[in-house]
Length: 470
Image (cartoon, rainbow, N blue to C red; front, side, top):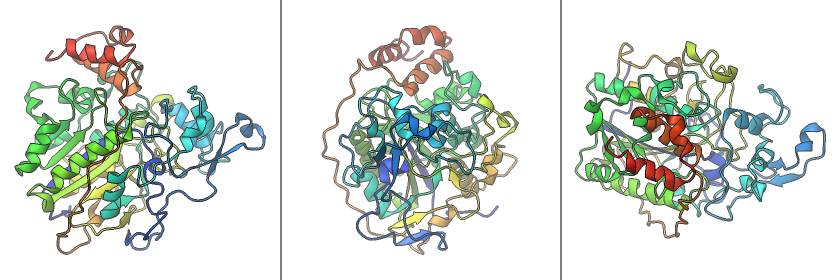
């Protein structure tokens, strides 16, 4: 296979939580200059963000023939913690958000019209929050990097559902037939080889950096193939990431996790996006001031849309990754993609103002990261993960359009907005509960019994304190 990204020696992926493209970057190119470069060159010159006239009905009767009580999308959020409470994100709920009560099909009667009605089922006092989107001034770091380098307006989550399934696709190219996190989430159901096992076998350096000391890496917690103590040194802190950037000691592949529980900065609603902005600024500062910046490719993405509004119906025709997925849970054939998520790619070899879409007939999804690693590192088929989704995925090879690296480095001021803390008395979200149940399984505890004790986030923190170093 031909090598891609030849000038690159280090790939860094940062994956945040539960935001759609429209929710975070829908108005990126609404005002000001249009994109300077679109890839592939034959694709549309306009960024596919928010457009006038986008609405959702707020009345369930609309799906039974009633006139819509239309809620328009808005280009700013009223609060940096919108939407609050957390939207629904399981497979059944996402299906309703995209198709209403209709059976999913490529030509639906109500495409992407179920977001407000579905969000109202959470008991939200104002269900119209789900139609509020962030302006570039409200997410200045993400927006500035998107405009200064490359952003995709056609990158889809791998599964129209929750965190574990989508994070599994970015690490393993499959979710082993699962669409929801599980009840309770059990890592023994996700016992599949990952890209990190492949990199180990091929002698490629890698590390997972996570922004907390007490709570373990969700990547390691999810996959029993990453539990052996021989891999301990590969799981490091965010301070290690900053130091490794400064000392030009980054491994070939780095995966960065935010904090999901303690002072969360993962952007998971209703966590304050200002905290996520601060994390992205810290990542950007570490990478851009590193002696190895010109040899580094930084990818910023989100695992899934988390119930946040997006106007684009995800494509059908996705490749099922394996026999376990044909069909998998709830009869899903893994033959359609999830909702669009933000993806920003940073490198001095990328022209400012780039907007990119797939350069093949297959859309981008999270397995693009794995396909890119395969072709960048020239991993032979015999050593690579066997997922057919990876085999079909396009790569990021088209993005390095410059013949020499840029010498300009955008100066991004640290975010000044005050972060609203998440009270530890609040109930844990699904991802936080999954960290507890999976850690319990890893350390020989009963996940169901442990979850019965977790009624608040403080209870979850106390669980990790009791089991630190187990």
